[in-house]
Length: 211
Image (tube, rainbow, N blue to C red; front, side, top):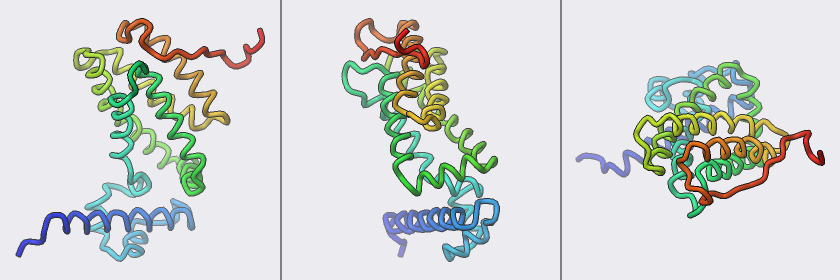
């Protein structure tokens, strides 16, 4: 008899989760550079070949939620409240993500590990920017712009770059307001956002308060 598809998929998901959990535990305990894929496979009680069926590289073990991140970015644009501009929706999403990472103790340890490991920080940047095409398509569809519209592509790229600035800042809320305030003003100039149809926030550049 053929094993039910649901059961097979659940078993695959369990194996993938076991590998991701084992990898993060070992990486945080010993340091990323001191753990090999064989160590992770043994900890999860699977073969190395099985590990590579689920994760294409050692770096990918740290970023198990890659697809979820992309889906959340696209949803932030497509499911934004009526009257909220696309830059404002992305600002809210990025800020929520940055605050969540900072509040999660394990997440904070992972973030420090990624930042302190060149191979991981470069992989994280490539992973984050891979979502650019999906986000640009979602933005273009929302404003009924043609595929490949330069303004939509630029907004997607700048928003993803801004996420790194917001996460690293001591005051993510202020950083998000400043960075996305600049994007909002530039986006309005493209003519894609209806006049008066977007949320507005006054943005005061740092160091200019009270002048």
